Length: 528
Image 1 (cartoon, helix red, strand yellow):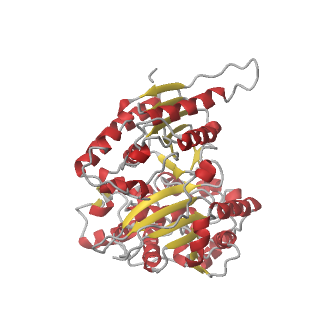
Image 2 (cartoon, helix red, strand yellow):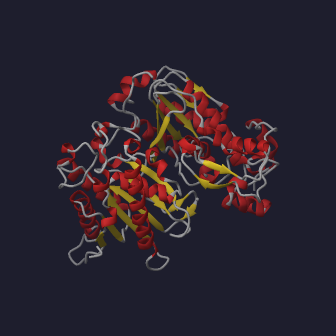
Image 3 (tube, rainbow, N blue to C red):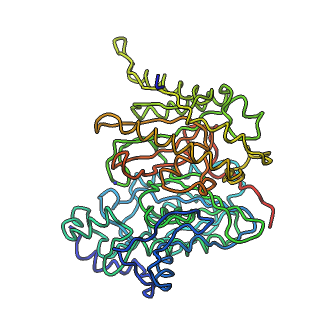
């Protein structure tokens, strides 16, 4: 087998709940390209249009958040946990909130916040939580979410106006159909070209990126090793993107669901300067990450789910994480079964795996559960799921070419691919590019009906394929982390030829007691 009518009162009073950004920042001409290519966050990631004056370049860097590439040095490893507030009354009404403060949590939002509180509880968390500062947006929907998650702990929740939601000025308070009727082309630009969207003389997304940089400066200079931040959809997107060195064109690409949890790890460098930064997980939601069919309010019927195979029996014998050369061990079989159960919310069309035993066995488990899912009666005919094994999804032989001392890699929480030689990462990048093209081809098959493709393979392969999806370069390989048994979901609202929208990265809640805790203690406590 191959093999996503406002009353004038809202607009008249919105300035009471927003803060305007500095007026001395030069604005970019929307008809001029922002940059020519994307590079590594460690090697000055974007190239600004060379025809600009130096003043324009600096101003646009500030607006785009590109100065977020330079962060305060830290002495010990720091983990930052970002949480979006629970569902609000204006979320439920479909009203544009921005930085207004008229909405409050719904009962569903309170329940989501309680679920997130439970998600953020484990032994390690309880031991170190008294040392965690909690930061929150000052807006009521966010503060209430933070209070629920913080629970009975006595430490004060710090609020910071820079963590408020994106300032949308005259848009705030409008229902979406009202925005379309009242603002026409401007509303369309907000939907399809948000980085260049301008309203009341402001570029909201660019201002948000500059604000996110200010947030990181304050978070990183705090002495705590772990920080909880409860804020909003857009500002959390900007925090994740600026931490990774990604510009405003990544707005609405890194989803943040109500009460979704994202984790960033900051590791000090021995020589000081900007720390190494890794996205440990993105948008771990209170509900299933594969239920529903929309991305940022846009309907989608095309999806790729990246499944990291379960742990194999040979993994303990290798210094390289998750070799997958041998059959699944007991934990690996549990992980595979838990993955298959989670994916029951999907009707999978195609399952692709590498040829290594751990990948094949994980894929087989998913296939069997999928094919039996609709067969509950005696006369029911099992449906067929197309399966295939593709050598391009095997990268274990590439990883083992590394001659560096890989001892301890099994315990490295984030960014372990940075430890490999350039020729190894180049080979990994090139092969993952071929694998990614194959997945896009499989996704393009058939009509416009729903098409879900599952890819089972090594975490390093999936990290690299996400890099290709985001149009990054191999220097970003250390900026993402995946665990065995995790899933990552990419939606394609414009089809396989359009941009992929990352719904979640490194989701592990389905593994239950075998999952990797969100709030486990940070490592590398030694000072530099």
